[in-house]
Image (tube, rainbow, N blue to C red; front, side, top):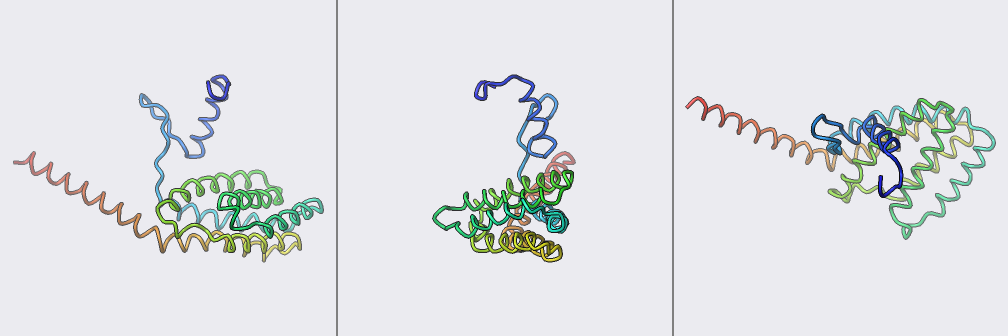
Amino acid sequence: MRRLGVGRTPIREAIQGLRRDGFVAVTPRRGTLVTEIKLTDLTAIYEVRAHLESWEAGPAAERVTPAERIEATGLIRELKALTEQQGFEAMLELDRRVHRFVYRCGKNGFLAETIDRYHDLSLRILNVAMARFPELTPRMHDVVEDQLQLLEAIIHGDAPQARAVAAAHVQNFEVAFREVALPTAISRTLRRQARSAVSSRVARSVEAG
């Protein structure tokens, strides 16, 4: 409240929004805590996104307006002008804008809101995953090429192509994540479970003795 210069109500509403989206948990007598980030959740989120993004891209190609085609052309120019020197953050910001543009073109606010929420959740986990496994950082060329194909399909009203490209854009990273990070994340989970099981057996033995 002090930093933003606002009252309790907007802060409370913002926290409730974060709770609904899964970013924080409100626990009685403990307070509001940031939820745990689990790398293994990313595959489940990407499975959902692959279907939703593909589903949204079809109507986007069918319902795009002339004004939106002009906007898509502008995004294509920005993608082609993107350079490695601008860095990952610039690529991620433009990629996000392209996704949200496609959501708008679909003319379904409920679906757009749902996909946007899962996109936010995946980006949250992705940043942690990339910090642990730098090889998961998406290559700029791949991201740009995917988005160029998607925007071209939407401009030309090619719904099947738009759906295929949108799904592949998500699935390609999911495959890489499963190969690189998932085995490590699962093995850590199994080790924690094993340690917990051993501790429980030791405790039962002590109690029995």
